[in-house]
Amino acid sequence: MSMDVNDKPRENCGIIGIYSPSGQAVASAVAGIIGLQHRGQEGAGIAVSDGSSIRFHKGSGLIQSVFTQEALSHLGEGKVATAHTRYSTSGSLLATQPFVDDGLALSHNGNLTNVAQLVDAGGIRGEIISDSWVAHRFICSRTGNTWEEKLRQALPLFRGAYSFVIQSLDKLFAIRDPWGFRPLVIGSLPDGGWVIASETCALQLVEATFIREVLPGEGLVFDKNGLGTFFFDHRGPLSRCVFEYVYIARPDSRIFGQEVHTIRRRCGNILSRLKPVAADVVISIPHSGDSAARGFSEGSGIPMVEGVFANRYVGRAFIEPVARRKKTTRLKYGVIRSDIVGKRVCAVDDSIVRGDASSNFVQLLRDNGAKEVHLRIASPPLKFPCFYGVDFATKGELIASRETSVEGIRQVTGADSLGYLSMEGLVEAVSGVAMHFATTPANIFTSAGFCGACFTGKYPVPVNNVVKKQDHSAVARRYLGASLPAQL
Image (cartoon, rainbow, N blue to C red; front, side, top):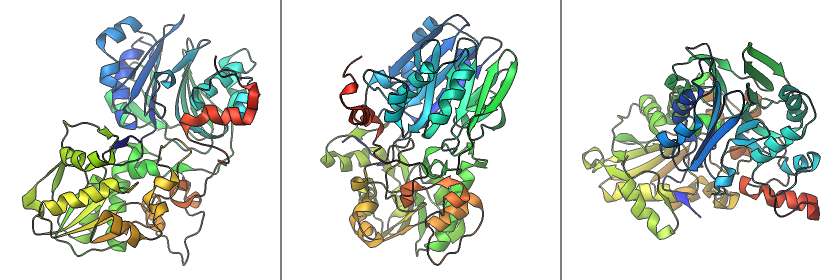
């Protein structure tokens, strides 16, 4: 199995939509999607409409290698554009978004949990490329004279996580599911146009002014008449992904009404109170632990030093053989020995997934002279897979599912001590309200308006018989039997 050296969950996707009266939608979409590169690094696509047709370009790799000057010159410009950057669960360019057909382009952040039912109800035939492709085909299959009518029919039938940016020949649509799993924000452009993006960090790159978030269950329409809005569903409960705060979103973004860096810093501060440590220095496991490490240092009074830095020129290293991981960790990180030699080091990170990278990191510090190494993790143990758009390891691969205790995990990592932020502590960080329970309630995240299923196993939207994105075709075949053709 391919694995990033940081052993982190794969980010889901980043989406952006532009409505530009001045006809500069492509330039704005490209600038904005660069700000969302952290949400997906393996493929990108863009679509543009000039009112008469939708043109598009897709490719594998980072945005700068896909959106070359030559590729963009063939697109031209237009008033409406949508772009998408993705983490590829299947490795197929065929699944790269936006999906474009029948005068409609769709980009999706999230994961639908009722793909098989949609395939059946929509009369969709052919190879199931992805849940996002099914959403596109299902919307196109609805009756109605306008895309608004088709969307109103289709959206209430979707289950799971979906933030969409959708474009027709002359309109831009923004959709957020009624549970509010994934962030989606609105900004106004200097030319009087509009931008929709996964995070506010993308707005800065197009000089847009943040207006507000798209509300759960809300649809927006941007066209020559301005901004229109409609609500299509009010199911709830509100289930914003708490892992967006823990790891996914960029620290300078504001999502779900709060700055990400502030929340992570607060997590570290609370962690220092709940899991104190006798240490000489605090370091971050770069860069996902940066904000939490600062908060831990402030809360504990232990000085923070750099200690370890990430080699920016190595890039994202996806590696197959287990034997190579240790070597790659040493290529990825540089150690400032004077910061750690002979010292008790507290290393702070946002999460532990499989545990391989954590154990390699601990050994790296020991080999460079650390007297003791203590791990502090600014989230609870990850025990369950996500079915709403974040590609965690399978349950069997998650170290917190395999090991029955924190002590067991500590032994695997080789740290002198290991402390996790509790679920109560994480809820306190995101809500600002201290939590005190004799026994942690199963609905602790739901009661605060968040989804924490990766920590609790309590999924707010049913996920019975749902599997990972790359297996949607198999799910549909199992549901429909022989009625689903093998090929288009």
